[in-house]
Amino acid sequence: MSNQRISYIPIDNMPPDMRKEMERCAIEGTPRPESSAVRAHVPACFWFFANSWNDVFRNGILDHAIKELCRIYVSRAVVCEFCGNQRSIKGQQTGVNENQVDDLMNFEKSTHYNSRQKAALAYAEAIVWRTDTDDLFWARMHEHFNEPELVELGCAIGLTLGQQSWLRLLNIDHHQIMAGTVASMAPGFETAEALANTKSSPDYWARKKSN
Image (cartoon, rainbow, N blue to C red):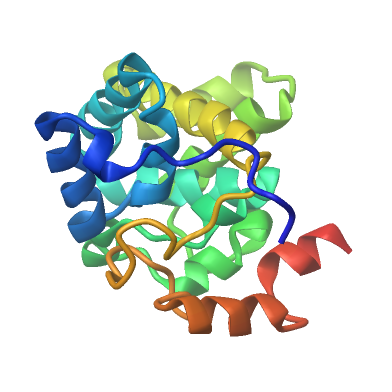
Protein backbone atom coordinates (compact mmCIF):
# COMPACT_ATOMS: atom_id res chain seq x y z
CA MET A 1 0.00 0.00 0.00
CA SER A 2 1.28 3.49 -0.83
CA ASN A 3 1.99 6.05 1.84
CA GLN A 4 -1.00 7.55 3.63
CA ARG A 5 -1.54 11.10 2.37
CA ILE A 6 -3.35 12.76 5.31
CA SER A 7 -2.79 11.67 8.91
CA TYR A 8 -5.32 10.54 11.49
CA ILE A 9 -6.10 12.79 14.45
CA PRO A 10 -5.52 10.73 17.64
CA ILE A 11 -8.73 10.04 19.50
CA ASP A 12 -7.19 11.35 22.72
CA ASN A 13 -6.83 14.74 21.03
CA MET A 14 -10.54 14.95 20.22
CA PRO A 15 -13.16 16.64 22.42
CA PRO A 16 -15.73 14.39 24.16
CA ASP A 17 -18.48 14.78 21.55
CA MET A 18 -16.15 13.77 18.73
CA ARG A 19 -14.81 10.82 20.75
CA LYS A 20 -18.40 9.69 21.27
CA GLU A 21 -19.02 9.75 17.52
CA MET A 22 -15.78 7.83 16.95
CA GLU A 23 -17.01 5.17 19.39
CA ARG A 24 -20.25 4.96 17.43
CA CYS A 25 -18.23 4.48 14.23
CA ALA A 26 -16.35 1.59 15.85
CA ILE A 27 -19.56 -0.07 17.06
CA GLU A 28 -21.89 0.61 14.13
CA GLY A 29 -19.58 1.46 11.24
CA THR A 30 -20.50 3.17 7.97
CA PRO A 31 -18.41 5.20 8.25
CA ARG A 32 -15.62 3.34 9.97
CA PRO A 33 -13.34 5.28 12.36
CA GLU A 34 -10.45 5.89 9.96
CA SER A 35 -12.21 8.27 7.59
CA SER A 36 -13.70 10.14 10.55
CA ALA A 37 -10.23 10.48 12.09
CA VAL A 38 -9.06 12.19 8.89
CA ARG A 39 -12.01 14.59 8.84
CA ALA A 40 -11.26 15.41 12.48
CA HIS A 41 -8.49 17.75 11.32
CA VAL A 42 -11.34 20.22 10.78
CA PRO A 43 -14.19 19.77 13.29
CA ALA A 44 -16.64 21.48 10.93
CA CYS A 45 -15.82 18.87 8.27
CA PHE A 46 -16.08 16.07 10.83
CA TRP A 47 -19.57 17.16 11.87
CA PHE A 48 -20.68 18.12 8.37
CA PHE A 49 -20.23 14.54 7.25
CA ALA A 50 -21.33 12.83 10.48
CA ASN A 51 -24.57 14.79 10.68
CA SER A 52 -25.36 14.66 6.95
CA TRP A 53 -24.65 10.92 6.81
CA ASN A 54 -26.86 10.28 9.82
CA ASP A 55 -29.76 12.35 8.49
CA VAL A 56 -29.62 11.41 4.81
CA PHE A 57 -28.06 7.95 4.63
CA ARG A 58 -28.67 6.06 7.87
CA ASN A 59 -32.08 7.65 8.41
CA GLY A 60 -34.42 9.65 6.18
CA ILE A 61 -37.55 8.82 4.21
CA LEU A 62 -36.25 6.33 1.64
CA ASP A 63 -35.72 2.66 2.41
CA HIS A 64 -32.16 2.25 3.56
CA ALA A 65 -31.32 -0.83 1.48
CA ILE A 66 -31.69 1.16 -1.74
CA LYS A 67 -29.34 3.86 -0.46
CA GLU A 68 -26.82 1.20 0.58
CA LEU A 69 -26.86 -0.41 -2.88
CA CYS A 70 -26.22 3.00 -4.42
CA ARG A 71 -23.43 3.71 -1.93
CA ILE A 72 -21.62 0.51 -2.86
CA TYR A 73 -22.26 1.15 -6.57
CA VAL A 74 -20.37 4.42 -6.20
CA SER A 75 -17.54 2.56 -4.42
CA ARG A 76 -17.22 0.14 -7.32
CA ALA A 77 -17.47 2.92 -9.92
CA VAL A 78 -14.76 5.17 -8.44
CA VAL A 79 -12.75 2.23 -7.00
CA CYS A 80 -12.75 3.52 -3.43
CA GLU A 81 -11.43 0.46 -1.64
CA PHE A 82 -11.90 1.89 1.85
CA CYS A 83 -15.60 2.50 1.28
CA GLY A 84 -16.16 -0.54 -0.92
CA ASN A 85 -14.88 -2.93 1.74
CA GLN A 86 -17.51 -2.03 4.30
CA ARG A 87 -21.22 -2.70 4.49
CA SER A 88 -24.03 -0.93 6.29
CA ILE A 89 -25.27 -3.14 9.12
CA LYS A 90 -28.72 -1.69 8.61
CA GLY A 91 -28.46 -2.48 4.91
CA GLN A 92 -27.60 -6.11 5.63
CA GLN A 93 -30.49 -6.32 8.07
CA THR A 94 -32.87 -5.04 5.39
CA GLY A 95 -31.82 -7.47 2.67
CA VAL A 96 -28.68 -6.24 0.91
CA ASN A 97 -26.58 -9.33 0.11
CA GLU A 98 -23.26 -10.12 -1.52
CA ASN A 99 -24.86 -11.51 -4.67
CA GLN A 100 -26.28 -8.04 -5.24
CA VAL A 101 -22.95 -6.40 -4.46
CA ASP A 102 -21.09 -8.63 -6.91
CA ASP A 103 -23.50 -7.76 -9.75
CA LEU A 104 -23.70 -4.01 -9.22
CA MET A 105 -21.84 -3.00 -12.35
CA ASN A 106 -24.18 -5.23 -14.38
CA PHE A 107 -27.37 -4.23 -12.57
CA GLU A 108 -29.64 -3.68 -15.58
CA LYS A 109 -29.20 -7.29 -16.75
CA SER A 110 -29.05 -8.82 -13.27
CA THR A 111 -31.74 -10.96 -11.68
CA HIS A 112 -30.65 -9.91 -8.17
CA TYR A 113 -32.59 -6.62 -8.10
CA ASN A 114 -36.20 -5.61 -8.38
CA SER A 115 -37.36 -2.84 -10.72
CA ARG A 116 -37.26 -0.17 -8.00
CA GLN A 117 -33.68 -1.06 -7.07
CA LYS A 118 -32.65 -1.01 -10.72
CA ALA A 119 -34.19 2.43 -11.14
CA ALA A 120 -32.24 3.71 -8.14
CA LEU A 121 -29.01 2.28 -9.53
CA ALA A 122 -29.75 3.88 -12.91
CA TYR A 123 -30.06 7.19 -11.04
CA ALA A 124 -26.69 6.55 -9.38
CA GLU A 125 -25.18 5.59 -12.73
CA ALA A 126 -26.38 8.81 -14.35
CA ILE A 127 -24.95 10.91 -11.51
CA VAL A 128 -21.60 9.11 -11.33
CA TRP A 129 -20.96 8.93 -15.08
CA ARG A 130 -22.74 12.20 -15.96
CA THR A 131 -24.85 10.48 -18.61
CA ASP A 132 -27.55 12.33 -20.50
CA THR A 133 -31.11 11.73 -19.35
CA ASP A 134 -34.36 12.06 -21.24
CA ASP A 135 -38.11 11.93 -20.62
CA LEU A 136 -38.07 8.13 -20.52
CA PHE A 137 -35.40 8.15 -17.84
CA TRP A 138 -37.38 10.57 -15.68
CA ALA A 139 -40.63 8.71 -16.28
CA ARG A 140 -38.86 5.64 -14.89
CA MET A 141 -37.66 7.60 -11.85
CA HIS A 142 -41.11 9.00 -11.12
CA GLU A 143 -42.71 5.59 -11.56
CA HIS A 144 -40.70 4.24 -8.64
CA PHE A 145 -40.02 7.27 -6.43
CA ASN A 146 -41.83 10.39 -5.33
CA GLU A 147 -40.06 13.74 -5.51
CA PRO A 148 -38.87 13.84 -1.86
CA GLU A 149 -37.39 10.36 -2.33
CA LEU A 150 -35.60 11.47 -5.49
CA VAL A 151 -34.18 14.46 -3.65
CA GLU A 152 -32.94 12.38 -0.72
CA LEU A 153 -31.47 9.69 -2.97
CA GLY A 154 -29.80 12.27 -5.19
CA CYS A 155 -28.27 14.00 -2.17
CA ALA A 156 -27.09 10.67 -0.71
CA ILE A 157 -25.49 9.64 -4.00
CA GLY A 158 -23.89 13.05 -4.47
CA LEU A 159 -22.47 13.07 -0.95
CA THR A 160 -21.18 9.53 -1.43
CA LEU A 161 -19.60 10.34 -4.79
CA GLY A 162 -17.80 13.40 -3.48
CA GLN A 163 -16.47 11.77 -0.33
CA GLN A 164 -15.43 8.51 -1.95
CA SER A 165 -13.73 10.29 -4.85
CA TRP A 166 -11.66 12.07 -2.22
CA LEU A 167 -11.04 9.18 0.20
CA ARG A 168 -9.71 6.91 -2.54
CA LEU A 169 -6.74 9.28 -2.91
CA LEU A 170 -5.68 9.13 0.73
CA ASN A 171 -4.47 5.52 1.02
CA ILE A 172 -6.24 4.95 4.32
CA ASP A 173 -7.37 1.49 5.29
CA HIS A 174 -9.38 -0.40 7.88
CA HIS A 175 -8.20 -1.72 11.26
CA GLN A 176 -5.85 1.22 11.78
CA ILE A 177 -7.98 3.25 14.21
CA MET A 178 -9.86 1.62 17.10
CA ALA A 179 -8.78 -1.77 15.77
CA GLY A 180 -10.45 -4.95 16.97
CA THR A 181 -13.99 -4.18 15.87
CA VAL A 182 -15.68 -5.76 12.88
CA ALA A 183 -18.67 -3.43 12.64
CA SER A 184 -19.84 -3.02 9.05
CA MET A 185 -16.86 -4.80 7.50
CA ALA A 186 -17.59 -6.74 4.32
CA PRO A 187 -17.09 -10.51 4.31
CA GLY A 188 -13.39 -11.28 4.04
CA PHE A 189 -12.31 -7.98 5.59
CA GLU A 190 -13.21 -8.56 9.24
CA THR A 191 -9.62 -8.43 10.54
CA ALA A 192 -6.36 -6.91 9.34
CA GLU A 193 -5.12 -10.40 8.40
CA ALA A 194 -8.31 -11.27 6.53
CA LEU A 195 -8.19 -7.91 4.74
CA ALA A 196 -4.63 -8.52 3.58
CA ASN A 197 -5.47 -12.02 2.36
CA THR A 198 -8.54 -10.89 0.47
CA LYS A 199 -6.70 -8.00 -1.18
CA SER A 200 -3.96 -10.36 -2.35
CA SER A 201 -6.45 -12.59 -4.16
CA PRO A 202 -6.67 -12.31 -7.98
CA ASP A 203 -10.44 -12.16 -7.50
CA TYR A 204 -10.29 -9.02 -5.34
CA TRP A 205 -12.91 -6.67 -6.77
CA ALA A 206 -10.70 -3.58 -7.03
CA ARG A 207 -7.99 -5.53 -8.87
CA LYS A 208 -10.50 -6.88 -11.37
CA LYS A 209 -11.82 -3.37 -11.92
CA SER A 210 -8.39 -2.00 -12.71
CA ASN A 211 -7.40 -4.72 -15.16
